[in-house]
Image (tube, rainbow, N blue to C red):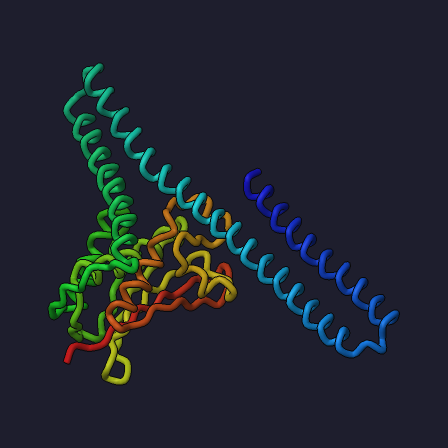
Length: 297
C-alpha cells in the first residue's frame, strides 16, 4: 500500500509538470501569433519560457529522486528492524523456555546452538550498519598489510559452509592465482564474505557457488564469485551496488537483508584502488560478481 501511494505521488507530480509545460506552450504560441512583429519581446519571451520549462523539469526531477530515496530509506529501516527484532525475539523465546520448563540435555544443547546462531546473525547486521558508516566521507584510514588473498578466500568459504550448513561440493574454490595484495584485512574479508553470502542466499534451494581467482595483466588479481541462482536483469547490474538497493523479485522478498552488502563490496574495492562489478545473462541464468585488487609490489 505504501509503495503504491508513492508511485501515485510520482505520477501526480510528473503529470503536473507536463501539464504546466503544456499550458505555457499554448499561451506562448498564442502570444506569438498575436504579437509576431515585436522581436525583442519575442526573444525575452523565449528566454522566459525556456527558464520556466527548465525550472519545472529540474523541480520534477529532484522531487522524483527524493521520493525514491525516501522509499529506499524506509525499506532499509524496515529490513534492519526485522533483522534486529527476529533474532532477539528468538533468543528471548528460547531463554524463557529454558527458564520455565524442564529441558533434557540434548534439547538444551540444541537451544544453545540456535541462540548462538541468532546472536551471530544479530552481530552481523549490526556490523553491516557500522561498516557502512565507516565507508562514508569520514572513513577511517586503511590499516594496510600484505594479505594472502587465497588464504582469506579459503577462510571465508569455510565460514560460509559452516554458517549455511552446505557441503563442500556446493561451495567450492578454484584458486589459480596465489597473489598477495596490500590492503586492510578486515575490509577485504568483509567484501569477500559479502559476495559469498550474497551468492549462497540468492541461489535458492540448489546452491552451486564457485569462487575463482586469476591474475589480470600481471597488475591485478581478480576474484569471481559465480552462482546459478536467480540472475540479474541487465538494467539492474549497476544498481545492485547502490546503498539500500535490492533487486525486485520473488526471491528478494523471501531473502532478508539490509541492502548494504554489495555497497560495502564496491566501497572496499574503491578504497583499495580496485573495482567491483556484476555480470549476468539475465533472470534465471545465474550471476557472477567480480572483485579486483592491485597486486602488491
